[in-house]
Image (cartoon, rainbow, N blue to C red; front, side, top):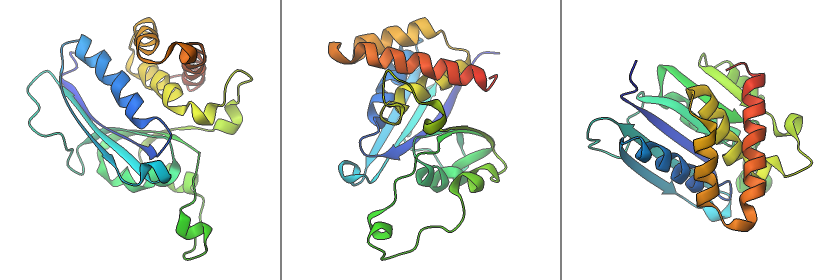
Length: 201
């Protein structure tokens, strides 16, 4: 069946490479001839605040860059609190890819408010959505810090799930990152493929 398009929210916090992920994915879909609309919302991203990208691709003109609540096909999140923030946006059959990484807010760190008493991972699991959870601690690599490369790891996992050719994705990564970071990014991508295949996607 032809892929006519999907609505994707990419979420995390400042410094996690949300915009790079969005850029890499857009290059892949543009090569396939899809229409794209992307809206990046960068709150206090540079201070560890939330960053989100509404990413829409379609074989028909896309009129709005924003995705309505309940219309999201895929939620790709690099931080657990941000995952919980956008779960309600998913379709009934929407799918979640998330990291267990968690960054406490400044108000929690300064004890102005209490953190959630329950495990965020368990709350995500109980959402009723099909969910794939990546634990950086369980997937450490001697070659790179996976927590800092989750965007590339997640790109590979998403590509494996969708059945996209990894050779093409790696070439896009190679063309898009500075030369001194190519090797590390490719290793991160290969790690993502390994994790995805362990999920038996």
